[in-house]
Length: 409
Image (tube, rainbow, N blue to C red; front, top):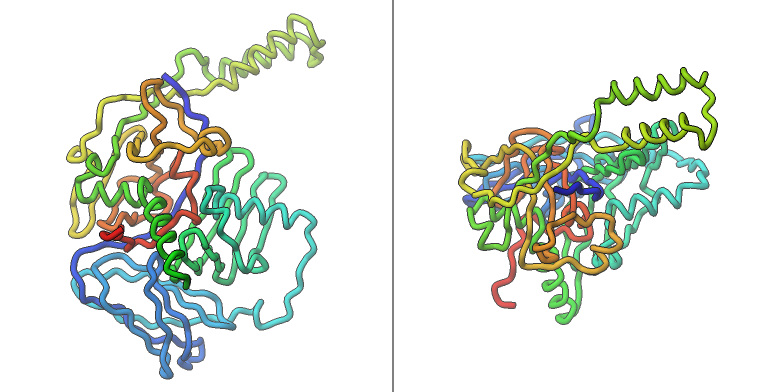
């Protein structure tokens, strides 16, 4: 029996699927007065697909597969826009109305905050990450971040009314990222962020492209995207994933909160609220305070392998579902943890002594059931919470949802 103390992270996974070719998303982009807007950038979240509107404000994104897409729109002087489009058996046409960005159109007054740089550095650590790939990433427009710290709730939130631009020289991508929300709770140490990225290939020499291809493969292998793709195909074990269960049991050694609080109140009343250091009452109060810090639940690893056909069901075309009790304890046996991750990341997961230092992640289901696509994309936001490697690897280790490992390496 053991208890994991690793940090948590929410990730909004991108919604996509893969079956048949030939569908498209077309449309027209206008302002609120009805005037069409030529030159607007049109992107698909999670992909490298992009285009611009023509002189009539029209666009088309072709050769798409059935799935759940987020269309992103960028136009100078207007707020970023996103529209969800579901493709099943036919193409879709949309009308997009952009709102003016009052901040861009007016003189910007920047409020001086002596802690802003520290908060931005913290944001970059939790958003871009601290992996080796993250060290080669740069946020090109940090001035677009709106940072707020609630000292009462000890809550850091970051927003932006522009696309964030991240240059990833480790993987060879330039990301446009529509940040929908970022939150870091200092009390719980839980990070939650959601957003919609689009990928653009960086230009580089043949040697650089070769290095990028190798780094992308490393980033993809063992990732949550890789895991859910293999779940969809039913070959997770062949791909190197072993799935166990982390079962939560009530901690029988911890009394109820009501009993703990009653004993602490009794001690305070008996001493009229004044507890002398070193006294019996002081030691007793310290004892009950320590008891209150004990976990209410203890996690136990069930080493029985979870079989794919019992975990994954298919209720809808092009979409599969998982719905499980307790937590999934996912071991990726084809890569080992690095010393940096194990010793300094704060995300390392406890393991039995006979399990080598394979990469381990824990999956908590926050909303059930969870639907996912053949590409590894998750249908619902906020549906899963990760610990371990998948919490450690963030934007710096993200590849497009249609990424395919090159055959000729």
